[in-house]
Image (cartoon, one colour):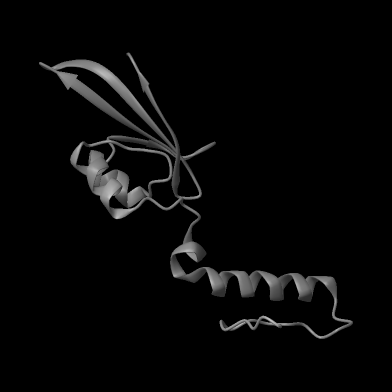
Length: 117
């Protein structure tokens, strides 16, 4: 039994150059992935877990920039080179207590580090 692809896809003709074949494959994968996957490759976080993280003001691996802003607010410090890093400060009774470093790769949180100043 043959399987049929229902989504739009591109098949290059035989004898096409390898670059044309590669572009056809990339275009097909982007179309099949949908708009969210085409923009970024953040891992999926289901809505219940995401709401729990936002209420607890937690940032976890795989969140988008917008989700981090919703959890922590706008970052007071940002650095772009060599990789994008947002730095948040936690203060207790006016004294600096902790620094939170949020590292991004391709628009998604790669890791979160908590450091004492």
